[in-house]
Image (cartoon, rainbow, N blue to C red; front, side, top):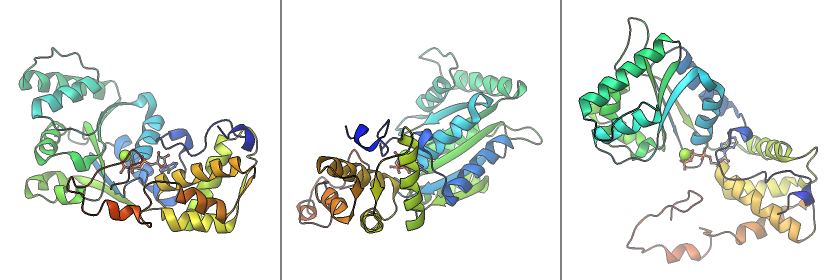
Length: 295
Ligand SMILES: Nc1ncnc2c1ncn2[C@@H]1O[C@H](COP(=O)(O)OP(=O)(O)OP(=O)(O)O)[C@@H](O)[C@H]1O
Ligand SMILES: [Mg+2]
């Protein structure tokens, strides 16, 4: 809507995990390097935890783009599946042909021969679990058994697990000790520092622009964004997107602190105002909004 006004070709703060907009803070760079190392050196298991909206899915999308045709990838998201359904889903992700009523033994056989074949032709095979906090202990065990395949030197299946911090509690379960012992890389993604956030905003504006973005954020505006978003990229995007809209409707290309505050006050839910009280005694409990925040 406001793109042309600011000399942008696309909306710069779209909240999708688009790898084209991937910004490498030091910790994102390190996490990406660890994931890529795990896959390319067939080390087996890597684990990334991170706060809500910290950039885990964006990281994975970027890794997938980097690996390109070097890897075959099964991406497992939110699941509540029994072990056969889970194996069936993995087979589907790998595009292994399967009759819909295949039993577990058939599924395992087909998956194993797929994995061996890919190994022989020199491609990496990865199972990526995003939203790992949603998986049950049984699902983790099932996947671990599948990833047991190894030669004397290499793991044939690389398992990358990403999830919100509560995932660590699931993984502590004694039944998952064999999985934990095999994790060779671990990183926790924290929200960005103020400096990183400032560079992040500039980076996304340039990425989205035709030549040079025709908009400036004042230092105070950046401070106000940080005060609200605390360096969480998803929230930074949300505030910046709204601030650009407020700037546009006020016909100004200088985003100052007043504009940011106005943008924030128009965003719901704002936990700092009385709206938050409305949710306090909610008997339904916690809910997740489209933008990822929980109320
Ligand atoms: N390093 C980054 N570079 C560019 N954009 C990023 C980065 N990290 C996060 N983002 C932006 O923030 C948004 C939220 O990131 P993402 O969905 O990857 O978070 P997440 O950690 O997977 O969140 P959740 O815990 O809810 O699954 C993304 O849509 C993306 O636009
Ligand atoms: Mg995610």
